[in-house]
Length: 186
Image (tube, rainbow, N blue to C red; front, side, top):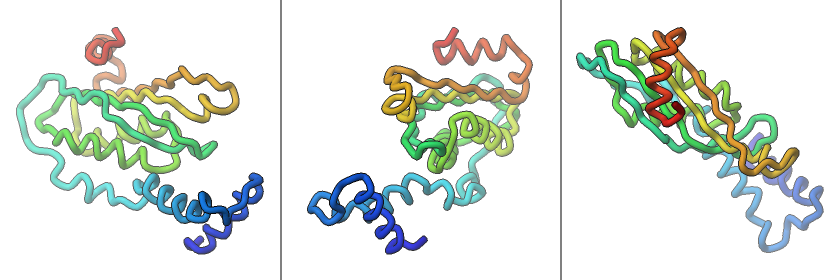
């Protein structure tokens, strides 16, 4: 669908909701929605390989590396409503490190599309494992979903929390405990 067709669709949608799409406050709304949705779904149009080029470098570090509270915004694929929160990534290096800003870029790459939190958590973990080959890696995502807060059950104070465990932490309760303590969950 091109932008002009989308604007026609949005004008019809606004009218269906019971408002006048030609009134001053709404006349540019279809173009704004078009621009907003393309920005919020830019992850579809990014090249992940280009994004991760030169992301890692050799280093003998063997201790836990953690990046906490990486803010993100995404869109629930079921209701096309926002969900937002934070991502924390921890890993045990295996001969290389990753530039910390690259971790945030991976988060944005997968958050900026129609998404479910569970899949996004796994996609972030799997990508970082592929790029970094760590001994262990964990990702946790904590998010507030507007589809839960403003419609349906209307639970404004609820958060969804998801985890992905890779490498040694797939089976290692002690390692998981170290990560969970680092994010204040133990």
